[in-house]
Image (cartoon, rainbow, N blue to C red; front, top):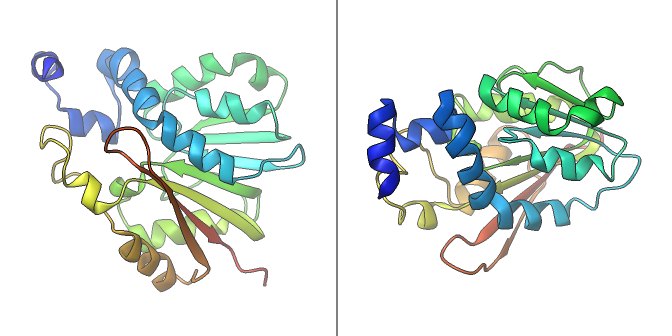
Amino acid sequence: MWYDALLRFAGTSMSAQLEKPTGWIGRLIISRFLDKGNAQLNEFCIGRMNLTEKDRVLEIGFGSGRTIADMARTVEFVAGVDFSPEMVESAKSWNRRAIAEGKVDIRNAAVSALPFDDASFDKVYTANTIYFWPRPAQDAREIMRVIKPGGKLYLGFRPRHIMEQLPKQIIDSRFTPYSPDELGKLFTDAGFPQIEIESRVEDGALDSYCAIITRPAS
């Protein structure tokens, strides 16, 4: 593939960049690759969120920041965290006006340590990040910590049977894929048994899956 030579030239790999976009490759190439690759998944999952003007939303792993901009047009407030400094700068640029208006807050942080108080958000969204969570059960609890009781996490993903069909140049040992049942067990074991998984067949092989996990009301 064309990107193999480009990545070798830059001294990196596609899987490393998908985990954490860095350098000019991350800013100029991977951010666009992610926007295109996640477009149908984002559209499907955000459609399930039923966003309202009163919602306070967090996106984890926002890439270029375009999805944050889209949500900010509807909701009261959107925060975003990403552990790639390059993606943070991209998202700040893309959301410059909304940040100035106080509608958007972009931070450089990881899923394992979210810089927000307990019960800060009505809804949390993340797409194609779970494969990289360093401590999945603890990270699941950390996400649920910042959701208000009764609020929901919307987790976009491609399941194991799809991920394992992708080229090894893209999907390697950095990725931990999950089947829907494995994902359900992860959250149930973490203390959040109320989980629904919806899916939609897309053009091509990358069908969209959205896990909806509810934080107990009490």
